Image 1 (spheres, chains in turn blue, yellow, brown, green):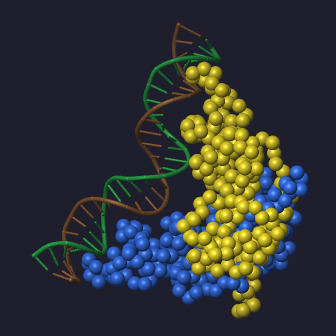
Image 2: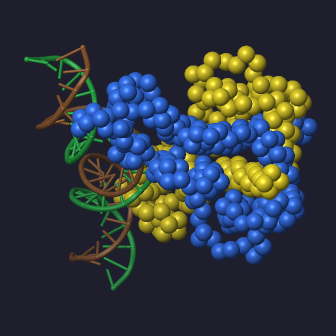
Image 3: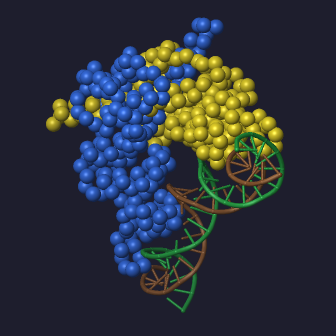
Length: 207
Length: 207
DNA sequence: ACCCTCTGGATAGTGGCTCTATCCTATTCG
DNA sequence: CGAATAGGATAGAGCCACTATCCAGAGGGT
């Protein structure tokens, strides 16, 4: 198929497709000759992936480009998934300006939960976030952290057993990124509802 | 104090302060005469609130303005807190384009958890989000939802008992918004870590 | 009294981001 | 043969959150 059909099938304007081509998000089509190119199903799924990462997950062009270049560059799957997690959950923008905490509380959580004690982005980010919260004067007690970690342990267990990894790279990123984002948002919304519910109950009791 | 001192005390440039004044985020100072105005401590805390909402929570000018106008307009505290929750957790941007679900799963959660059965933004947003997930082909089983809701129930209980409401309106919004955001991010990061941990363990076992 | 500094008000410009539009020539399908 | 399309290049649009400049009036320290 050629550009116009690709545009029609995906609902993305030709101008935007050209833009994505320029930015290197979308690989060039097979060049039939100087003024005609042939696009494949791969381009369709790639374009759908780009759309989802933009519109649903809310990543910017640079982030998407970085992930896709890893995927196309033959990065090992586990590394790719780690990068997806970093990007989707914003584990990157760690303001390391805050001096290290005396006792990295995140590490304590790991030990307490008996999670495998290996360094990870998630863990660094957690430690940094706890430091940030402390520096902003938002208290996080060990009890609270234990309650949180127990809860997410449950969630992660439920979540991971409901996951399958597809073969296609586009599909893999799609599933991982969109799933991660949507599950994260789901937890946030449930938390909001739970919080509201508890607040109402407390208010009723005390009123 | 006058504008320049306000600027120096808060680290916000005079130009930005003028901008916030224009946008109605910051109330005008007491006008001593046509070319001199007097700002108070209230302006300092208001400016700090604006900075936190921008830099930490990531709200935009319009969202901040809306919250502050409610606060200044004498909106009841519970309504204000509800608005803060809506804004901070992005409960607003509900794409209602997806037709209603046959069985709003969020309502089922409420009944199952025995949470007070009153409509709320959080609940509408949850239902909409579940519909979105379904429409994107991301499965959410009842079991998963039960596990999630139990976990957040624990979290919310732990969280709400560690909360106090200050008297000052700026303080109230600050505490609520920043706290809500940071706790939400904390849960997300813990979830990422838990997810990673479970994945590692599963990988080790199966490898 | 003088001048440097500050004020509110107005208006315009900046830089980042994501597109979107226009113009061009070469080519090719119908 | 001609309407349509391709690639390439470049410019513009529209949003956002500032940031800068200019102005004239007024103060306050010396």
